[in-house]
Image (cartoon, rainbow, N blue to C red; front, side, top):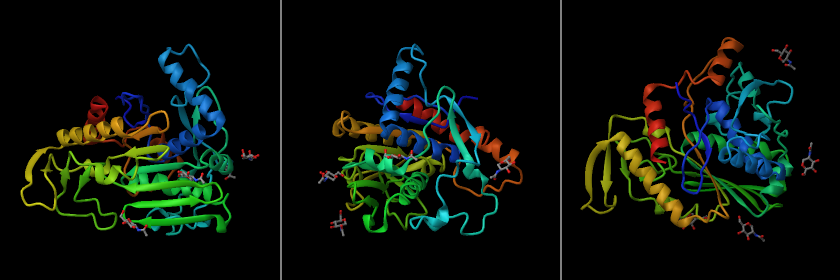
Length: 328
Ligand SMILES: *[C@@H]1O[C@H](CO)[C@@H](O)[C@H](O)[C@H]1NC(C)=O
Ligand SMILES: *[C@@H]1O[C@H](CO)[C@@H](O)[C@H](O)[C@H]1NC(C)=O
Ligand SMILES: *[C@@H]1O[C@H](CO)[C@@H](O)[C@H](O)[C@H]1NC(C)=O
Ligand SMILES: *[C@@H]1O[C@H](CO)[C@@H](O)[C@H](O)[C@H]1NC(C)=O
């Protein structure tokens, strides 16, 4: 079984490299990678990582993508859910009485180095005058909430603000002029599911060639972390619209789901190529992870199995992931 779950930096040609983990794993990896990247130290590590990929391990210093999940109840979890005023009810397991909370104690351990413990102040210094933006579906919204909660305790109340306007949610650490944002675009391209609140519709319609409405909000971000996943797990065909939702002369057609996914990713990557200055903006694409369903772990062994393996991923998701990889 090929590793599927992917956290990857996008090379200029948007080609893909990957490694694999579960939801929590993924969550922590993203945070860790973004965090590490932002500290000076991490920048070095990532550079080394990229180099070692190119020059076949000539540089063995550290590949952050090669590692494993370890249980660590001494230095993890990194934040306390109950103390984070920005935690959303959708993600507040502890608040609603969940007992088995040790899933929060898993830490990513690269094989060849140690990642410095998360330091919110160092992160904020790295983000000074910058925008870090998560774009995608509710899985990426979870990443954003976690990131906000991670830095929350390092910022006094008078120096932080949260604003939401439509699909855009912005946490700001004013002392640093640093923004940590989330933009709701579950399919990346436009669709009839773009309303951040009421998006559960009987039939999904995708405008595979239209992205500008969303993308104009991303243009100036310094770090972009994309995902698009949950909303592609539907029937074998999806309804595609060529034209606009407002005009009645649009053309609607049912197209195979994987083909629609392919067209959407093409629109997205073309947009990035034209609009994003790669010397200024760092791009990440997160592919698949287990969805946020109810997982109740009776034993630590059970939890470990889900977190450290990819067994939970069904054929449907595997094909989607594989396909995404081929397209990019
Ligand atoms: C950490 O986990 C180990 C092994 O499960 C356990 O023996 C120990 O009591 C735990 N420590 C804390 C502080 O929870
Ligand atoms: C966190 O980072 C700040 C700024 O880089 C540094 O001054 C501080 O000592 C760090 N804290 C820890 C616990 O490493
Ligand atoms: C604050 O950060 C934004 C980017 O988020 C930047 O465009 C702006 O110039 C910064 N303001 C100052 C005063 O540096
Ligand atoms: C919210 O966004 C809309 C559309 O982008 C904009 O016209 C409006 O001024 C924004 N409102 C606030 C309070 O920022």
